[in-house]
Image (cartoon, rainbow, N blue to C red):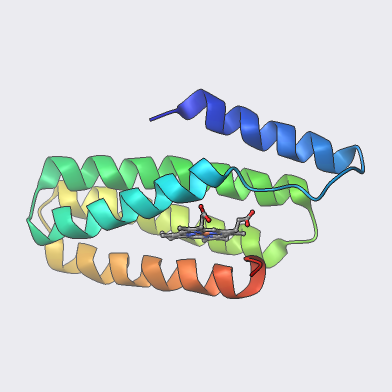
Length: 127
Ligand code: HEC
């Protein structure tokens, strides 16, 4: 996982926005990594793989923290900040649930998480 470069991309985007230049863009890698981790999470929950599912959910928790920070800096996007926070909290819940082998409950949370992706995209993703 490329933690540092993703973070730097977000900071750069936020600074570009503050300087009044181009619209900030979410690091494309960030959403792509979220997509990959989310897919991996569903299959690892289905396989009842505690360790792998836990690691995917932790990655998602960290990445949604970055999304939350991005929208906080962007401003005028309270809905997106809330949705990013909800996604981060759902990911954290999944970490706990898979650690204790509660895969059915983890599946429910993962379904809610995927719905949250779509809600945010409906409002904030162009094209
Ligand atoms: C808080 C809002 C928000 C949430 C939650 C969110 N996304 Fe996104 N996503 C975006 C935005 C905004 C874009 C468009 C980025 C851009 O065009 O700059 C995007 C783009 C994407 C893309 C396209 C990236 C590309 O390379 O074109 C994928 C894939 C994606 N999201 C997957 C997900 C998945 C999977 C989830 C949930 C697990 C998720 N997103 C949750 C806001 C969100």
